[in-house]
Image (tube, rainbow, N blue to C red; front, side):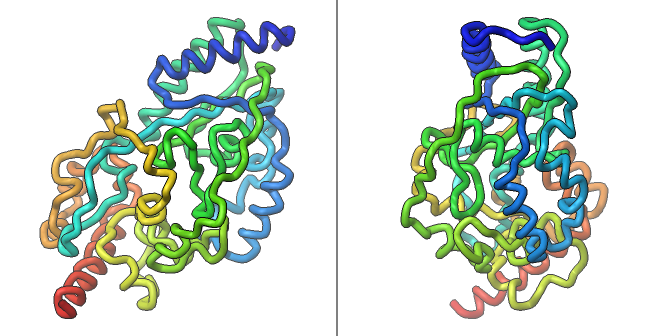
Length: 324
């Protein structure tokens, strides 16, 4: 890929960010494609401590995970984007209603973001000629939060989610890794300060220390990635009526006072997604599950995992009613 002068790079970077906003992204930042040395040490320590639970895929392709040039030979820049998914609908207070994380209320974000990233890629190619690169949305060994942080789009909070000063944290992250040299934006400071609301609010004490989450205890992991019925009895009461994912650490974060409704219609709640009772969910068979969650992130739990979560939530609801 031929290089450009600094002034041309600056103009191209600004035009790229403008195009990202036009396509519906809520923010766009750029970082230099280089090894993630500090993040590699942190990841290695986290993996060695077994905090990735059964997610053995996180151990694979370590070199690609920490160096984008292993994924895209000749890569010069990582373009990160944010896409807001927040919908102003409250989670139900009724313990007999199953709670699903906001990010999974609508269509699968992988499909939505990939579509927009391909459009942004095509735009960049039209500006500079042939481009070598790839689009990524949480489906390859890419540390998306690390790249978004390096691109100045936010900082990783004590719950490890990325926080943006203008958006809060209810957004998806995607990347283009390309062989086009663009001026990097650079990281911004951490604005969590002394706040520990996410740590204090976690029902299963999964945030074992600031900036470290033990997946073995995390409700999102337990209800989505964990396979089998061997969820620890110690953790089950803390799962409450969450049947897919968990929003607790984000709901209590003060920075989410800046959240705003998404403009993406495909993220809006599907019928029944926020107000269906556990007694109805438990009746799902495989055909109903596939129909209800077609092109939805919820299908990742598979029917067996989803029904396991519903059974735990129903048990917790009964216990709560008995105590009342």
